[in-house]
Amino acid sequence: MSGPPISLSGITVLYGPKPAAAWPRVQAMAREGASIAAIRTATGHVPGLLDATLDLPAGSLCVVMGLSGSGKSTLLRCINRLVTPFAGRVQVGEVDVTALDVAALRAFRRTSAAMVFQHFGLLPRRSALENVAFPLRIAGKPPAAAHDAARAVLARLGLDAVAGEPVEALSAGMKQRVGLARALVTDAPVLLMDEPFGALDPITRRAVQDELKGLQRDLRKTVVVITHDPHEALRLADFIAVVREGRVVQSGAPDALMRAPADDHVAALLAAAQT
Ligand SMILES: Nc1ncnc2c1ncn2[C@@H]1O[C@H](COP(=O)(O)OP(=O)(O)O)[C@@H](O)[C@H]1O
Ligand SMILES: [Mg+2]
Image (cartoon, rainbow, N blue to C red; front, side, top):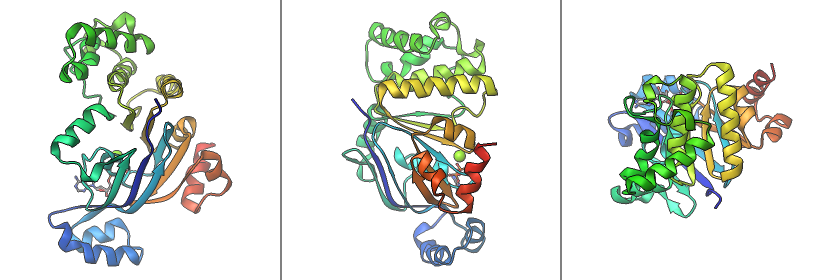
């Protein structure tokens, strides 16, 4: 089963105490091309995203690239509504995520969209096996079945030998593989990853990137990876979106962006990847 397409239309996120009151001023400044910093100073509100529209293709490895503070994490968090947009709509396959009630949202996160955090979020004293089995146990799977499924995914990532080791005893690269295994074990067709490889040394980083690429090819999930690293973006992506100042400035296949970058910023990011 291939992962679903993900569509964001007209997404605006406003961080601050009174988004509705600030919105007219934010919108007026945004129309004049004001920077996020200028909008923050004038309104006391920070636009995490401003009228961002993006269609991510089904079953592909999508990379969202941009400088620090451009809105990448905000965009990713709108997909599973860890951040609630002030305006706009998020659609994951048939599901209108923006319309889900609390119970439906919880079910959606558990069954449909797994998230890998940069700092792993693993239980350090527990074994790799227990960590990977954890989401299945939460979902009510009996221990034996959960452990069998966890063992299969650990084997796939070359972790069989350390399955019984406490996570705190593992190297950073292995921890990250355990984090990846825990996200993959649930069968969720969407995988959301916020700068997942930032803490790894360059060699390990390449190895885990290659593993993710291979797994995605086999499993055909819709994977969304955030990075500020142009090398990583080009290494991984079937599809790239470039975010700047809360806006999606260009998206498409990597070679389409290379052939015709939308502006100097996109051109500079892509050029940086080739050095
Ligand atoms: N919880 C928050 N409260 C206030 N401002 C925030 C919050 N989260 C993010 N921001 C601001 O929103 C903008 C986009 O942030 P973010 O999505 O984290 O960017 P990125 O992941 O690309 O670094 C930045 O200006 C950031 O400071
Ligand atoms: Mg971020």
